[in-house]
Length: 164
Image (tube, rainbow, N blue to C red):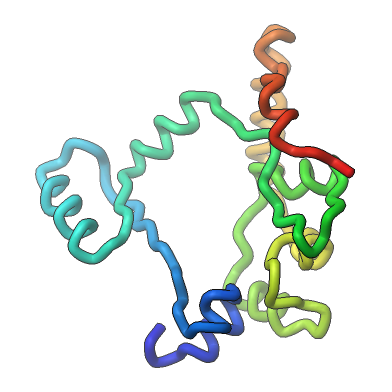
């Protein structure tokens, strides 16, 4: 990061980074299983370096809880109107991460805007997305086995997002 600051600013834009040369990144390392002998050492290292280290069990627990946020918080100070359909499409949990060449292609496009990353670039980000169709199909099959009351989105989640 230190040796390639200008490239980092271009690929990971943020106001803080561009204006004050402070990248303000946070990192998460996912490694190993919970309860192994190196856990204390991992936690100490995480505190010293200022990063988060999680085990793969952390993700298993999160998925097992069946908690799913129906909506994302998309910045609305520049783009005040994001439709429910666009927000839900962006929140699709089955999208796959962009590869490095894909992200570089997106970031080098003339229409890419470094400010308000998601809200301003939503159409561009969605255009280049790919999805894990097998996982989505498996999830839809699982949903079909649930009773109707377990498929409902809690009312408080609808209140989190106001559409204009």
